[in-house]
Image 1 (cartoon, rainbow, N blue to C red):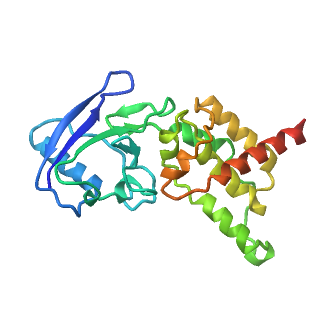
Image 2: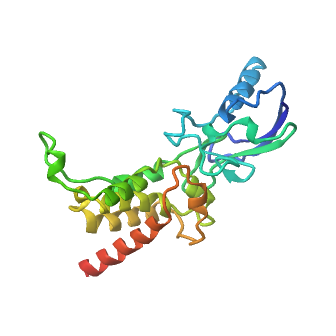
Image 3: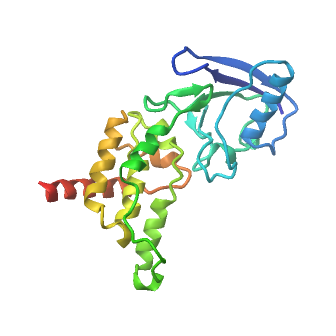
Length: 248
């Protein structure tokens, strides 16, 4: 299998970047997308050229680090997949692929395909936690939670913080990511202590980091690898309005 790769190369956030073309051959369709980039980097290293930098960790669709835009789509052509779960069988022999980093004002480029997503951490730090007593863990059965509520909370907690929703949104909004964290804790009794303040803290942090407002198009949910429900954004808006009315 042969592929033509047009990869974004950029030294850092302060320098201009450009697409550089590379050609690969003798690729296996069973290769993952990141394995293909490994092959390219091996060839570049042999030639004494600087390798392409990109983020990855688990390569199992869990960590959310493999943040790439492939032919204009976050994580690639497969719906609800991460980049590392994408294989070359998703493409045709001779295809030309444009590979870029996640684009957002809040995601400055570190180098090449690697971006700084510290802004997402700041949202979590603002309110993505609970207050709890120290010591022994309480008996689980002393806090009854209905099965449907537990399942709904788990659906929200499944967010891996990859940032694909942000890279896809026209306004670079982190609404789906942020709402998943807010909804997850709002649904459970353990998250009730900071419930009213949490949503305000996190929304303020979101705005301070330069993320845009929600476009209400649902494009974020379409690319989410964990299929976080779009309804979580509605829950976040409800929690926010309720909190502001309570405080005022």
